[in-house]
Amino acid sequence: MLIIGSHVSFNSNDQLLGSLNQALSYGANTFMFYTGAPQNTNRSKINSSVTEKAIEKMKENNIDLENIIVHAPYIINLANNKEESKYNFSIRFLKEEIKRCEEIGVKYLVLHPGSHVGVGIEEGLQNIIFALNEVNKSNNNIIILLETMAGKGTELGITFEQLKTIIDGVNDKDKIGVCLDTCHLNDAGYDISKFDDLLDQFDKVIGLNYVHCIHINDSKNPIGAHKDRHENIGYGTLGFNNIIDVIYNKRLDDIPKILETPWIGDYAPYKEEIEMIRNKKFNPNLKEGH
Image 1: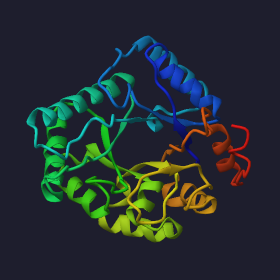
Image 2: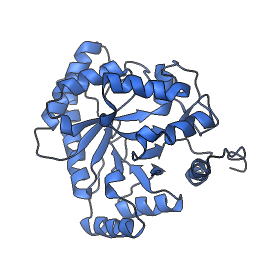
Image 3: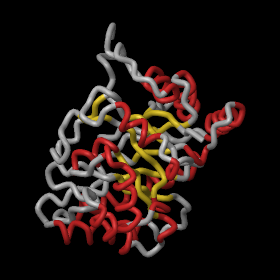
C-alpha cells in the first residue's frame, strides 16, 4: 500500500487536528511534523482533547497513527560534547520530545544524528551512542529513527557504516531505526538510480528491517556534493522516474514516504506532488503561477 504524505505544520491551537486537516487537504494518508519550532525550545502543552479528536478523524479517513512521524528539532546535537551544558541540554530536550510523542501517541521520532564540530568522527559517534542510551533509560516506546545525512560540515550519519556503528552501540535495539532521505543519500554519494543495489548494500550493512520512514526529495546537487539542498520531485538531479522507483519499491511497500520538498514562493506544492506520485506522471507545470 502506498503511504504518502508531507511535512505539515503543528500550531499551539489546533495541534494534531490542524496537522491532520492540512494533510487531508493534500490528499495524503500520512504526515510528519515538528511538535514546536525546530530552531528553538518554545513548546506548547499537548492538548489531549484535541489529540483525541484528531485520532477519531484519522480513523474516519483510514489514516493509521502508527504511520505518523514526528521530526526532532535541529537544535539537538548529540555528537558534540565539548560544552557539557549544551550536550546535556540536547539529551534533556530529546527526552522531552519523546514525552510529547508519547502524549500524542506517535511511535516514530526522526533525528539528525548530529555534527561532531571538531571532536572527530569516532568520538562524535560514541557521543551519539552514549546520549541515545541515556535517553532510552526512561521507560518509553518511542523508536528514534536516525536520518541518513548529506555530509555537509561535520555531520555524522552520512554512510551506512556510521549508522551501523551507532545502532550497534545502542543497547535497546527495539528503540532505534533509520529514516532514508533521497536527497541526502544522493548528496552523500549513494546512487538513487540504482536503488535496488543501494537497498542491497543497506541490508547487508544494517538490515532493511531498521527502515521505518523515507523522506522523498529531489536534489539540487550532483551525486556526492555533500550540500543538502532539496528540490521538488522531478526538478532536480535525481529525476522523476528514479524517485517513483524509490516510492514504489516493493521492499519498502508499507513504509511511510514523506515529502520535504521546498515551497514554491509562498505556496506548498504537496497536493500536486502527491497527485504526481499517485498517477506516476510528472507535472512540468508545477512551478508555474506560484
